[in-house]
Amino acid sequence: MKKMLLLLTVIIITVSWYGCQYKKDAEAYPVSTCDTSNIRYSVEIRAILQTNCLVCHGAAVYNSFGGGYNYDTYTGILPNVMNGKLLNDIMQVPGSDPMPKGAAKLSDCDIAKFRTWIRNGYPNN
Ligand code: HEC
Image (cartoon, rainbow, N blue to C red; front, side):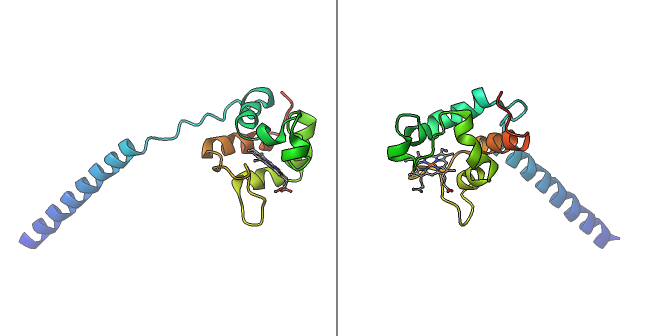
């Protein structure tokens, strides 16, 4: 009986300790606030391109710095969206051509926005 009580005490202490740890983790790493509920080409996607890509892939510079890929327009971006290269490159999967070239990888949220927009059928909205 004493042994049972001891075991029960140990179990209760362990469970409540892990319970507290879990709460601490939840406070330390709040759930991501990335909103992918309404991704439009003209707003969210365009903003990511503007900030991270158009310095090389912009209309005036893409031939000099962007390998000939003009991402200043919807039709310009379509071929590499449709063949999957754009998503692979920003996700920097092995064997891809990591983008943005020479800069930090896009945030998980920006990548999630691109993925959502592509999954939605890359509308020109
Ligand atoms: C510093 C300049 C620079 C920036 C910034 C940049 N690119 Fe590029 N990108 C290039 C160049 C140059 C090429 C041509 C291929 C090469 O040299 O790697 C290229 C090629 C590509 C390709 C085609 C490569 C392939 O896989 O065949 C894609 C897709 C691409 N870029 C997407 C992007 C996206 C999306 C961004 C922004 C998140 C971006 N790039 C930012 C310079 C840049």
